[in-house]
Image 1 (cartoon, rainbow, N blue to C red):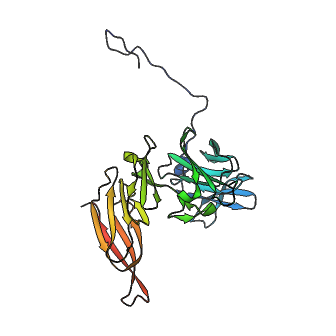
Image 2: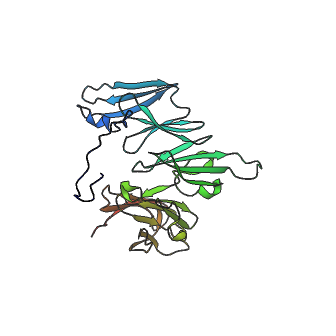
Image 3: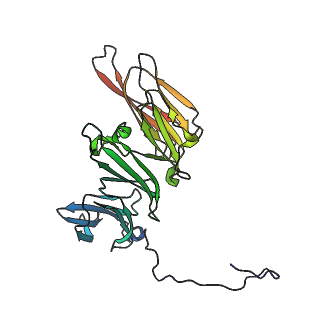
Length: 301
């Protein structure tokens, strides 16, 4: 606001009215019945409904034919609905008309994913190699959801992304990136062979310009609220099998729990990041069978 240099008082006010105001992306939260929405695809039609549990009957909100070429996906907080097309992705939202908010160009798009705070959209495509002996070529983009700008791009071999996660297109693990730092979407990381590569979203570069080296690491998981990674290293030639906590960006291990005779270990964070549960599958003494147990840990003490 401009001020008079002598009196230090304002020189007036300016009122601005936009011709095209931003859509109310949280309009669904104002539903007087406090209902959630869900989406289904049937043939070439995509339909959005209110989930009216009291009436036990869904109520149609929006319907469109040929809305997507592949599949559809809600963002984690339900603010956006994304559609996947051959030339890229689109996100929709607002009132019950589902206005297109942004386009994200990515030819031959196969997969998408949102960051937990919905700030970023990750897009993925794979391309046949010219030499049949080579692996597929991968193209990854990270977009700013609000502006549509490409913040980071990666091009390389599919072999670089085949560790951990659920197998997706061309054998690539998906989602490739796991996000940390809560809803601020401050960090993202991916699992590699004997390394965890952690990036920050201020520079979209590796933290300290190098990956975290962890011999034989097979899995990791972010705290949902704090920049802390839990990771598990299986037994390698006998001995203990540690589950550890590593803060980011420090990368110095702060806690470790040694496990023995482990076949598999899965990590589950409580939604406030106060507790961590380990589902541990162990061998019996004869190693002819496996039994499952749980170990719970307080984190914020």
